[in-house]
Length: 463
Image 1 (tube, helix red, strand yellow):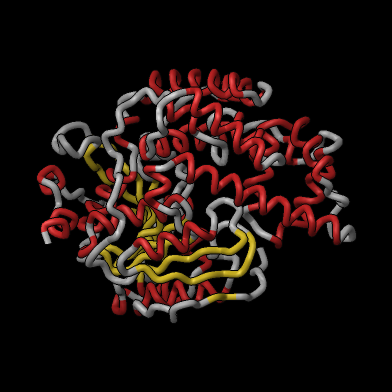
Image 2: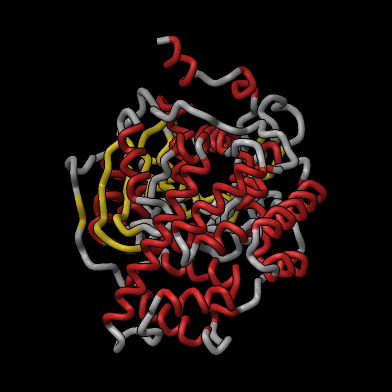
């Protein structure tokens, strides 16, 4: 009982944090409403420096039947929930739009909410151009960390999931909801898990789409990374075999391992990062990916596009948040051995991912191992969310980014976790499986949990 009380009662610092006042006004488009919200930079000193978060909402179309606020949390980490509101609200059911205020935010450190800044675009592009070697990975990480500390040093200790969860709880109170209703995909499943574990009695409903294994992510990062490498390599091999078997639909046929390795060596880390990102879209984009790979052989097409400033900004917060959440065992010799292991085990993708500069879908181990800030907002468990309402976890059997096994583990780790499965390719199930969406939305509206063992086998949605 003592553990349960400790996990459900707010800390003295959290109790002293002031609930922000939300002053919603038109965003300038006549449809959505926007507001800033101030939250403590450091919850140990809630009356000190504040961070201004930017929120955007779709107001419930039928206020008389309104259930409350649905907070949507973009993944990454580093994606904008403020931007996502428009896409999300336009692609859910009319009943969800009618009965929920749909609110997205840029979390601390993201885009409009005091963004993390590290290397400038030109310096970052130079790091990407270096050969993928262990020495270059360590050097790039040191350069990256120096820039992060110089530009965003005050923010770095406070970006972890614990403080993101505390921000969410203040926002829940600010909108007047007794309990949180939440939709999050990918990394946002970890933030949701942390919230439910810290505030289980204030959790009404959560959809965790492509769930993380929370304990492995935070406390055994080498093992977590290994699972991601394996999942990415497997997805690329499934694409490669499909491409070779269906040359009429795939311009890159025959997609032999040797041909892919040659192309990826020539394109370097930037091309690999773009390729792995596109695998997240699933089979509906495989034909287009084949065309892009074919064009890339002649150094044309979008796979060879230079880094944009938005890429640089996204990767800054992506690395900073993960390094705030995770601690790698110390020692460069162990790092060298671990990276060599994955490079040997997964020869198509892992060498570039392991030895590239800090970035989304690359290893963050060299940067996090040398991280220049204390981890004051790191949550290490437990992840059971004892006493919470039912929590819905979804997983795709062919997820290249978050292994399906992680969603299974999350559903079993949560005391009241419930798993639904899509037998399909790609990262996250929303906007890929109409069957999965139907279960998700029914649960958010009426708290109806799908039967145990539910598996959707529908074809991918267009898009």
